Image (tube, rainbow, N blue to C red):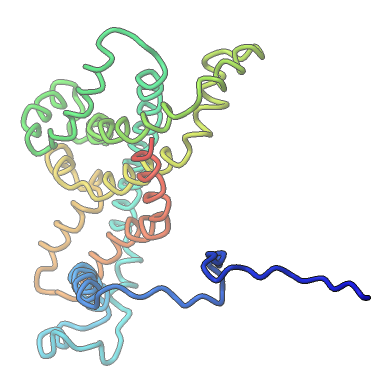
Length: 298
């Protein structure tokens, strides 16, 4: 008599194991078409003026007058080439670059030191100091421009690039501190204690550990500081008097006044003036989003 083995059947009511999401799964459904339409509408409103200015620089005044919304026919490069050969443009470009780089370095360096102290040390009025920087976000430069000019005049910095750099650093610190404090506060205390056991000083911990760990936030505030400094118009308008010290935003105004009848050349100058900040922001926009996300999580 042969023995037979039977395999127990799985009850029909037993739950089946869930399949993990993979390539064979159906793709996720798209959102509402209305949402994409509204998003594209906002993108178009933001991008259309920039595209019009850039393309307008490749046209002649006659083309702009007869067909304002048409593409260049033919494409004219003389407007851009004439500006690129101008020493005035490159002088204003150099001034803007100096102001933007110096302001960015000052904002990042001072902001890092202040944020490190607020995030890692306990002392009296710590909360009040942090609240003071937070309140600085609600105090725009437009409100303080008159007393700020008086201070700059008393310091002898009128018509000097330092008269633009120093206030820009001061007004850039609130945003920097608000972004960097969560990054530095999120560093575990165990890492600092282990570094102290290994003989690392507090200054060494700041440069070797704190700064690299908060690098996403540092990059974010650096990009924001550079773009804001490059596009700043109000402060240079009050402080700088001679054209030799003008930055590009002031150069655009002067150029527009001198060549008010040559619209195509004005559009070309405006395009070249805004191009560096636009490219810089477009290249590092993911870093900005990542840095702000880390600040919110912290």
